[in-house]
Image 1 (cartoon, rainbow, N blue to C red):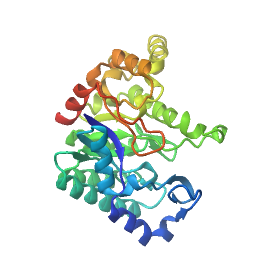
Image 2: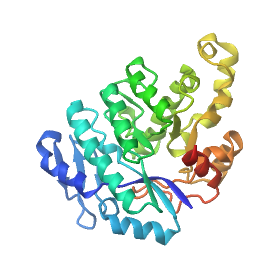
Image 3: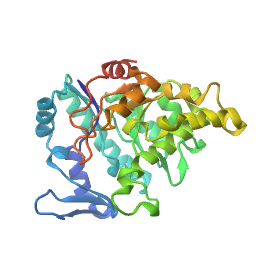
Length: 312
């Protein structure tokens, strides 16, 4: 069984954060004596620094215990650092990507990885992606946009052109939604995270970019957010409004089959609907391990999707 959606922080990355803690405003806070310290960067998106995030052997043991034969490891979104200068972002990306590549090379049968890139400087992000893939990584994990700009913005063209040339896996993974209406009851995570994916994926679909960059393999976190489940509304808009249809060569529901999706949905009926809509070969097993809202173990029924995404 594969797991396409896991996160890890190598020791060299933790050392870099400690060495640069003033620059990135890193804080370790002991919120609960029963838990590990929480790490925050720039006073945003604190998360528990569980041992599974940082202990390589423990991560491998937990993976093996649950029956995951091969995991695709990603950097954690809290360390994208897009709000800092591109020099800082690229420096950490280099450390993170090289560390993951070294770990994967030492565990080649059971680990692959995606890198992180300087999305705040798309030309530099393209170079980060080249270096990551030259080191053996499969692509990159990125956020759903930057400073209010969606990923179809011309600003990101250098990155998408390189992702397309490299036939890279590009894993779109949101951070918590900052909509002020969602400040309570864990809603920034519960609905804000899939909402951010929904907005980003809808933008990519309607922009025509899935035709322009058809060799880039775009993987959507958490089952694609809400997009697959409101695709009928988008199809209706395609029939009614040229503003929806003028950049497209087929119906929106057909473009859904150009994305890949992880299985992190926690609901069998929802997962079955997604498989019926996009095809089982576009879904990959995922867990989001070791975050609190992980689907552990990942769904076992989507080997076709895992094989097609990894082997193209």
